[in-house]
Image 1 (cartoon, rainbow, N blue to C red):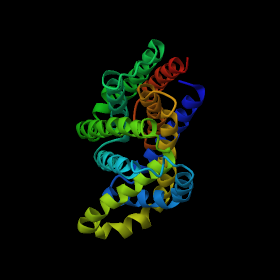
Image 2: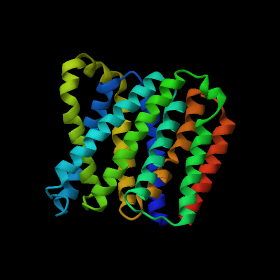
Image 3: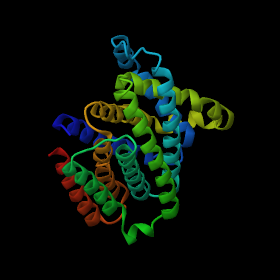
Length: 287
């Protein structure tokens, strides 16, 4: 992986960890909260997305809307599974499981199905990153925390969605050649449209209270969530998804350490050890 691609992925990891901390603070927001940050994301990023699409002949192709629709469907499942997990368990359980399952699946499918062949040193680095994530997520003290089983279950479901959208979006920006900013924002618009009927039918009363109580978190996520994933999509244009997937999950190190600091979740020494292991894997990928 080139140093530029790795730098994009690591910056994305920091952005991703920060917005997940904001999402954890609104664990009870449910679909209304997810809907709001998708709406604000569309509003904030639409000018840049339109500019990119107007300057890209490929971006205006007939593939954009259907490809973005598939991505939007998967991302809705991902967002709702993640938010449900945060409502039922600690961030220190849900986040590591989700970010660990996702890269394992995406890397395996990329190698076995898509035929990607990363170098053996980089491949070992990807496995070392996954091992570091396991170190961060493991530990008997965390097993006794709030909602451990629910956290593992919802974290795993989130991880499956992560693997699905990672592989599909890699196909969209590489094989189809769709521009990352325009593609992601089109998918985000689909997410808003897909969630609106259910929101109005079952959760209409929560729309106002959620934005009044959590507008700061909505605004933060609306900026950082698209930025994090657009950076990843840009990296996928020049680096194999079998390496980008594990490398971006270095966010688990930042997220777990911040969860210990801000939410007083346990085991700082184990989290630090896991961080060192993940950093070693990143170094191997960058070789």
